[in-house]
Length: 426
Image 1 (cartoon, one colour):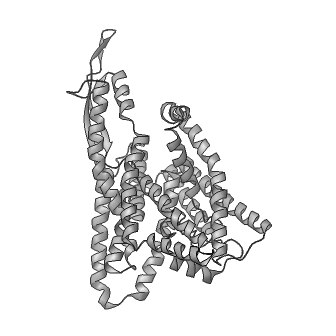
Image 2 (tube, helix red, strand yellow):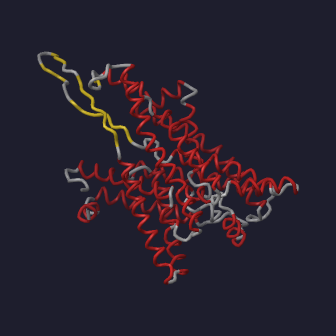
Image 3 (cartoon, helix red, strand yellow):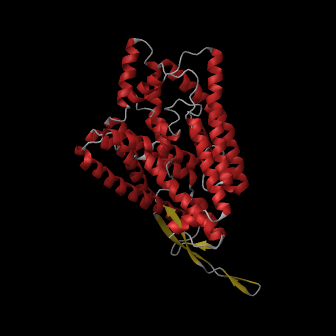
């Protein structure tokens, strides 16, 4: 492994790509620490210390939301726009045709629609967040013109991050959006380690060891589930053309145990954040409404069992839902039939589609339950032990994102090495 890593820096093209990604990360981290005008740092610490609603949302901004920076929205608007468009493929057949059937050109057009939708979503989210932070005293009261300028600034920051992600995808290695989120999560690790060191005592040694062991087990489990596949055997009929025989090969169709990735967690998070965000706005209303709003905030805080159960159920449900949107067994069965392929023992066409549905629903149950368990694990551990200092080691969503991005990036690097006639990572 060390030799392969050293080899990356001996190949000029790969070295330039890696250095380019590191430069983009540096630009991102600088922007994430440039606050919008009028921010009260003391109120920021108080607000985010007492409000856990934005904890997971802060992950996708790379800590920029907690800094109330010019890129405080992170890649949230772009991710939301992409998800909305993917859901709209179920309603509009033309959009579905562009997304699934027009190949690379169709995907580029689909991505362009996502970029266009990102701008109004970023403006709406930016205005909402600034209004909320102003009500909470985090940002000084703003006039109409100042509100317009600040909203425009954070909207431009979201578009800027989207552009940086596109640059990484185009000129670097791996998926730019995923790598930007990865950089934001990793950037928070040194601060968490520093807090542990400052508060560390000898009595905490067993707890630290237990959390590190649990972290290793969780990472191993995430890697196993993320890489697990159910291979469905596929055979191709032999055909004779011009005196030559074609086909007759045996291969397999891989079905991932968790084909939805972290998208169901993002879906569920959006739903779980909505009541709490509305309650935050209503806290400034009359006393009766403020009491109700406080009750809602408590019910949807990460320390309650109601939050954990609802979050788990939503993640499992959205795993099935998103997979149904992005993977159509009927299309797969039709494509196999057109190419002369068939599953041994299963008739082509409708019978093959039903067979794929049957296998997908069984494997997806395992992936969905695991994904839901990983999502709520930090809240469960914190609720049982009352310990918050080490939860970043088992950080649920964060660990899932980091492991997934690392595995995907390693595969990308591996393919780059193989293209240059080197062995891949072993």
